[in-house]
Amino acid sequence: MEEAMRQRSINIESIGHPQPIPLACRIGPILATGGIMGRDSETRVMPEDVAGQAANCFRNLALVLAEAGMDMGDVVKITCHVRDDGAREAINASWLEHYPDPAHRPARHTQIAILRGAVLIQLDALAVAKEAA
Image 1: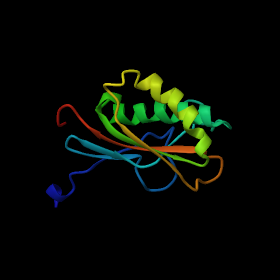
Image 2: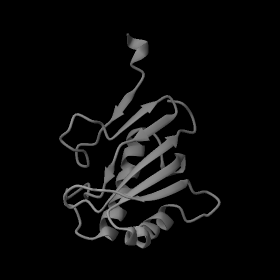
Image 3: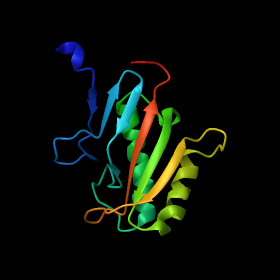
């Protein structure tokens, strides 16, 4: 049975949710996240604007990666789920902050989604570690 449970759940209380679902799961060098929201990890407040939420989403993704022993350079794909297609400009600002070099960016897809409550944007990502942990 031990061998069948290779997953390592990644949770961070300050950005997680009350559901029994981890923020991410790592198996060997591969990490897949669930939805990473834009709630501030220190104040736990959700900004009212998409730019603030997008910035927090990327910071929160970095926190999840760090908890898994990885960093933003390990990300191979990010999907941005947005309530409004006009969010792309705000996403691009945070995107370029974290990935300024066009030769070293993960794939990215943005799609319109039905998001709950005050959530205007949510990210999910796939990452591959430099070395298996």
